[in-house]
Length: 317
Ligand code: HEM
Ligand SMILES: *[C@@H]1O[C@H](CO)[C@@H](O)[C@H](O)[C@H]1NC(C)=O
Ligand SMILES: *[C@@H]1O[C@H](CO)[C@@H](O)[C@H](O)[C@H]1NC(C)=O
Image (cartoon, rainbow, N blue to C red):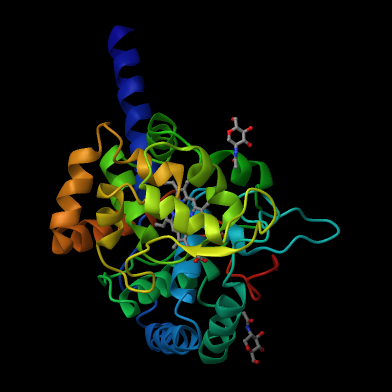
């Protein structure tokens, strides 16, 4: 009986393991079925970034918000309809997540080349990689084979994506819940080396935080009043807002993090030394960021026959 139990437990653990490794993504997944895929995505991202450099940042954020809610399954791309509640109106996305039109354009081009083959989730993963690279960041090979969700979770988007007033313990816990370590939190937060934020997300920090450089707070207050101007924009990285470099960590060292959550990574806690390290070592940041992006991109994807290949990224088939 004891042996039987042992065997049963062993088998159960094995099948759990087999299930999670079932979800394997493959580098050359569309090599035969959509050989032009990567060229199409790259060319469209070149156009999009030429039109507006910020788009590389906006797409990167979409991918983060996709992967943190039900895994990297393109759930963030689904529109709300009379009968469907998506994630676009969840707090972290509403009037703020952007870049959907670029994904639509890429999808249309990809469908013209090989219809019914490539998931919106994979298109988002590739567009993200290209955006980072085109703004001066690292490149990496994107494991592919994700499929698209038929569902979304507005409540998941509201509860599982960290907010800008989070403290370090909360940030670490929320990343841990997605299988990412504290160090991976710190390197992935380096994404804030590009892009813009609305005043409403950093107002509290510039008026109320004490671990902020005085001149920096004064400068930001000019375009972010105590009340009003909620959607006025400021760069996340004051030093080089459209270049994907390690300057974000310089900002943190100088107490010029735009969000309370950014500055938590260098505020006397466990991540200070890594922040300092990345501020002194751009190549290490680039390398570790690429590795962490591949890992974030593997958060519980739908594979095999699960989910679907959407025809239109905004709607389930
Ligand atoms: C660690 C917790 C994080 C918090 C609290 C956070 C919060 C925010 C907030 C509030 C904004 C401004 C949005 C707006 O004004 O529209 C923002 C922008 C952005 N976030 Fe994060 N974020 C976090 C992590 C990440 C991660 C892991 C990535 C990607 C790997 C990322 C990528 C971006 C990018 C690129 C932007 C600029 C978007 C644009 O310009 O359109 N963030 N983030
Ligand atoms: C692909 O296109 C062909 C021809 O336009 C069409 O007949 C077919 O249904 C499409 N397949 C999918 C999966 O959309
Ligand atoms: C500063 O903090 C106080 C107390 O929490 C709060 O009432 C106030 O709205 C904050 N000010 C800004 C500009 O966020």
